[in-house]
Length: 133
Image 1 (cartoon, rainbow, N blue to C red):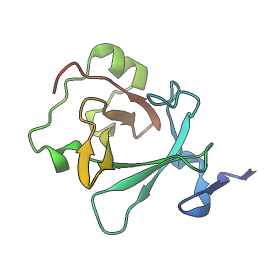
Image 2: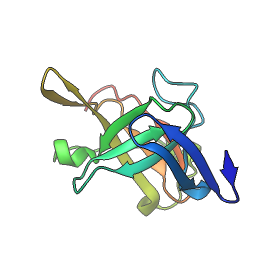
Image 3: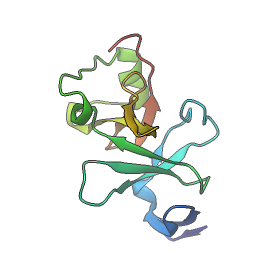
């Protein structure tokens, strides 16, 4: 449901949310395993470097994400020209890199091989798969 430049949607974790349309990150290809979900919003997680990447079109889907250097200080990423073109990335300052965090049996695991990249100026994103990190 939309009201002017805002989107109202339900979430399982956060209840109903209203966000400005220009805050929506579009992943045209979706995410690995979630190719049908294209629109997401980033939400802060308390006073931590963690955020929630909440799917707008599925109230049950939200991922914990963070800057990869929080979990691996030496993390670096070389972005190929095709990905730069896909993101329409002209300014390096517009690039945001996040990784999905999951907790399994009390162990925190960061998916450093499948980072999320998005152009903050255009709010266009993609998940890439790295051969090695």
